[in-house]
Length: 232
Image (tube, rainbow, N blue to C red):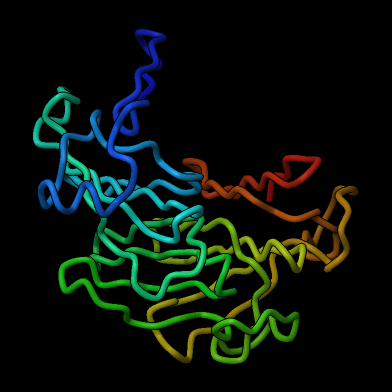
């Protein structure tokens, strides 16, 4: 946890010397004190679901962990447990839709983006073709799109989902992502593994393996890639 104002950094989960694996943690208790849990294996995504849950994707183990912040200001009260493991490939980027209670997961190993109902703990839908990497699609319906190792997500305040289609060197925009007939369009990337150029439309300019997405307060999309940070 980083406190920008105090300029401090502390470890709140995954201390060295914690439990060796998930099975140990589950045997000992449904959840364990976060600071005593095992090391987090290749943490690739994090998302906060208000008021007190934090989800962390562990790409190395193919699972999603959940921290419960009993007292947000006191990490000593936080607990951690495995929230989802079954069916995941290599979960990477996460995004939370608090209004609809949905956790979006970029499953890079399965080449899809998954939507989970947090309260019901069930999968609602997938974007992409499960275990079928490809480049077809990008402008059309969500059911026709193929993804290749998506690694990052961003969700706007009006519910638009952005996907870093990492292996295809592009960023996609999904309108009304909860619908199986949602429309998809390319917002950045021409499919080539390079980064350069400025101007519009952004979709004509390359982006090399986008791996991070964030929306600023003005709705601008910031994209980190292999060798550049792009502003859309």
